[in-house]
Every structure is written in structure tokens, then in C-alpha cells.
Length: 221
Image 1 (cartoon, rainbow, N blue to C red):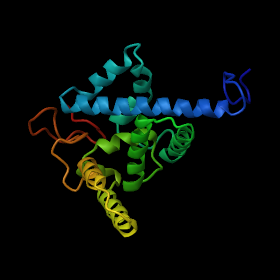
Image 2: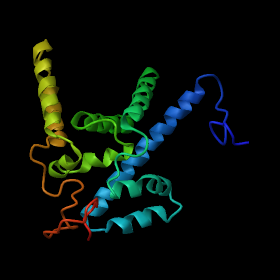
Image 3: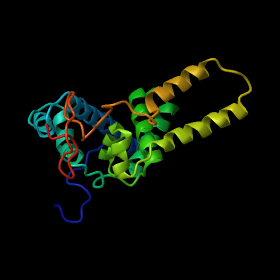
């Protein structure tokens, strides 16, 4: 046992093709858990919970969130966005899962949202980072620049999309204005709101805060 094998345990999933389906379902579950961890840590940071304390709380229980926190939490707060499964490979699986779901008319709104977040990261930076770099989607514009991300690229892409839509629209859809408004509400980072997302230069709720030590993700509050 052990030597030369691909895995320590093999699980039979059923008929031909169900193995790949099970893999994709696993990735769907990982996507939901990962965005939950990132948003929990963003929320805790902004209301003043110290980063290591929050991670300890998340990893010390038998809750469903504990395993994902143990897998990615340390890398996120230390801003290690290089190691692990790359965004590019992961996005391939998410796209396949969404295509398969579409074929069977199964809506997966949660997965669609997460896929769009990863697409956005790919657009404003690169796709060679680890999937824990999803946390960068919650950085403000200034601090995202430290990792080579350019939020203005998202606006440029939207401008191209709108121009192409104007050229090929054969009728005026009244819903377009509402959709455009929704996009700018969630994706316009030319002027990010103060305190938006992860801000390692702000200390908890209110106050001027101070610059943390090198490599720190959250403020040292």
C-alpha cells in the first residue's frame, strides 16, 4: 500500500462520468466555503476582531467552517496568495460545472457569483495565484495595487462591453439601465468607499489606525 498510488483511498461513485461529476461537485462546495471564510474574516476585521483571534475561533471548533479555515486562513492573513491550487485551473472546473448545470437547467446562483469574482480577479490581475487570493477582491484599490492589481481594468472592460452592446442592440431594453446601475454599484472601484473590504492600514472600527508590520494582512488591533 502507498507506493506509486495516486490516492490513499478510492471511492466508487457509480456509472461512467460520475467520477468527474463528483469532482466538480467537490469544487462547488469548496467555492462556497472559501467565499464564506473570506467574507467572515473581512467582516470580523472591519468590526475590530483581531486577525489571529478570529482564525483561532474558526479553527478550534468542529463546525463545518473549521476545515476550510485551517486550510486557507493562515495563508490569507499572512497574504500568501501564491501557494496552492491556481485560480486558472480552478476556474476551468467552475466553468465546466456551470456549463453542466446549464445543460440540466439547474440554477446555481451562488457558484455564478463566485465564478464572477474569480473572473474579476483574473481581469484586474492574473490567474497564477492560489485560490485564497479571492481575498484580494475585498481589498480597496490602494492596497490591491501592492499585489499588482489594477481595478481600472474592470471599468475599461465594462466600457468596451457597453460600447459593443450599443452597436449591436436592435431595440432599447428598459432593463439595461438597471443592470448597468447594478454593475457600477458593485464593481466601480475608481473611488472605493473608505473602509471598504480588507484594509490593513485601518484599525478596527473607527480611529486612524497605523501601518502594520511587513507582510501583515489585517491591522494589528
